Image 1 (cartoon, one colour):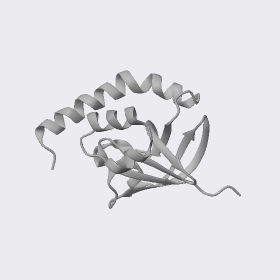
Image 2 (cartoon, helix red, strand yellow):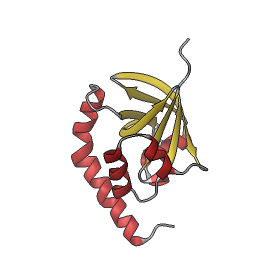
Image 3 (cartoon, helix red, strand yellow):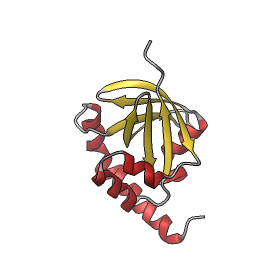
Image 4 (tube, rainbow, N blue to C red):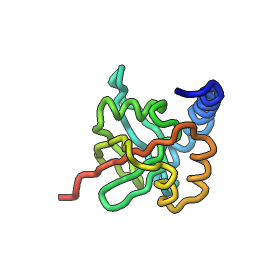
Length: 141
């Protein structure tokens, strides 16, 4: 259960990201200008509408790793739990993937494998409940 302090922090971070940070970031990521960040498109678990979010991702072969700052409180995490089939915009190209919340992974250690210290520091600073998400991309045929 989240403490009242964590809830307030999560609300402040969510407002900052939604209204200030994400709008220009979505455009920059869509154009392929921000390395290490992707757009993840999920279907709304209640509405069925497509939802697009900016996330930091590390790719290892046909697997992508995301450290979700707000864990299961993040809307996109709830959406991908309801429907694991997602689309990911990597380097200005959309790819299909299957997303999974990884329960038995240490998200702090996983962030360190990304090799981007500033990204890991920001996620740790603004996150309240770090959770690891694994994205499996189908093999190229």
